[in-house]
Amino acid sequence: MKKIIVITGPTGTGKTKLSLELAKKYNAEIINADSTQIYKGMNIATAKIKDKEGIIHHLMDIKEITEAYSIYDYQKDARKCIDEIHQKGKTVIFVGGTGLYIKAALFDYKFSEEVKQNYDMYSNEELYELLKEKEPNTNIHPNNRKRIERALSRENSDDIGKNTLLYDTIFIGLTANREILYDKINQRVDDMVSEGLLNESENIYKSGIRSKAVLTPIGYKELFPYFEGKESLDNCLDKIKQNSRRYAKRQYTFFRHQMNITWIEVDYEHFENTIKKAISVIEK
Image 1 (cartoon, rainbow, N blue to C red):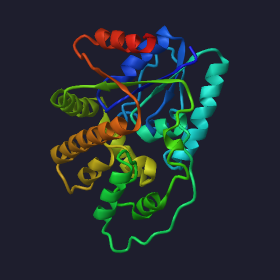
Image 2 (tube, helix red, strand yellow; image 1 turned 135 degrees about the vertical axis):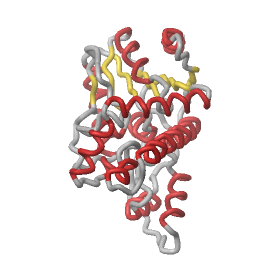
Image 3 (cartoon, one colour; image 1 turned 90 degrees about the horizontal axis):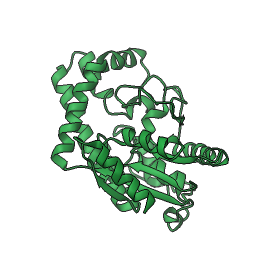
């Protein structure tokens, strides 16, 4: 199958599980489209897949947390992966919730020079709100003023090109009732704690590294105040849950405005029904 399949949507909707089943059915290799899973050593908070079930995954665990990795880097790497997978005669499946990665890889998304502007009159919080209006799925930390100003100043050379799809692609979005989804997100945070989130986060905290890779994912930086003795564990975990719910909301906003997605309501109790619906979308 020369078509590219994209499985996206908010966190907690079962994208990984669906991707494995579709990869088996369509003889596919998977390209990671989650910006936080690019990095090594960050497994629990990023919900990185544990058992790939023999399916080849690309662009996962390819960078150290001290290394920089931009959307432009991802665009080049993802398109190279697409070519290589197609040359094998296999299907390409993108899986992840980082909308800008998917957009940059599959659309005629160009990067141009920055236009210098003066943002001195804005507070950090005001600047971050401006950025979220421009890029709802931004991965920039709210306190990284320099990067926020750079992102706000950046203009794409071809607004039309940003909406020009370069590949024959089927977009599938997994969705769920908001209340159910939020319950799933909250439960997943509790599960991450059981799986060792505190140890993983403490190791990162003690490393002293505060790179984009460390400060972008939800689940590490929120625990730093706990390790510093400034906040209780319960308060920090509540912050992770709150930020995760807010991120899911921003993901919905981005996907609904940027791509022609067929949305599937997830059947958590009988996930095989979700798989069947996805197959019907692909084969219609």
